[in-house]
Picture 1: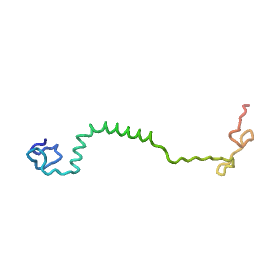
Picture 2: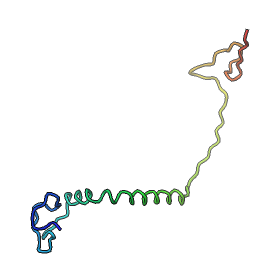
Picture 3: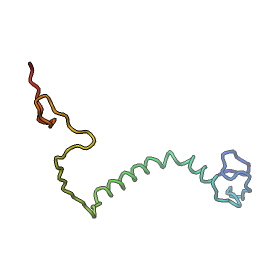
Picture 4: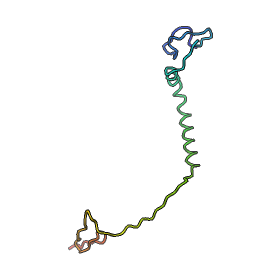
Length: 103
């Protein structure tokens, strides 16, 4: 495949080749991984995205939560410490019950 000559695209730069065209002492390393990534990423990306989406959908549909917490909160009406309410124009201290009469 790479022949007996040194190729700039070969992941085995400077390797000795056997008669069948394969490197005699092929070493697995970062350069081989980078070469494989450059050659196969375009072909491997679409199926990886589809399989990943299917896996996410399967887990999403089949997952059942084990714990569930609920709480009931009671909010009491109390005087505000930081920002006390001011009296409105009709004398009420509640902003919800204030009404303004047009004169």
